[in-house]
Length: 130
Image 1 (tube, one colour):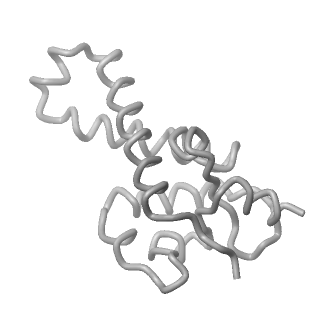
Image 2 (cartoon, rainbow, N blue to C red):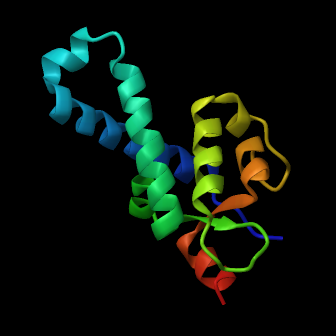
């Protein structure tokens, strides 16, 4: 069994991701557009899904996870990267909010169960990759 990261660090990583995604949207549409466009929250969510999906598949974690020294790994312990479609499924489920809040005793939420992943510390991820 893989030891998963604490909820506090995962929450911090999500906050970093959300702030970074919001900043990208503000840069693209401006502060006025961000505050006045009723769809700006969906733009932020879209940036979050794209950013977290591609970085999870290519670097082992979203921007927020990389900054907080967390990684998303395959639960099978193979050490191989998370496939792009699994990363997409996982991050879309995170956006639905409920899947991460329903979790098993090992700390893996429904989003991780569906994608076959786990969020771990960088130190744990290094051990999984061996």
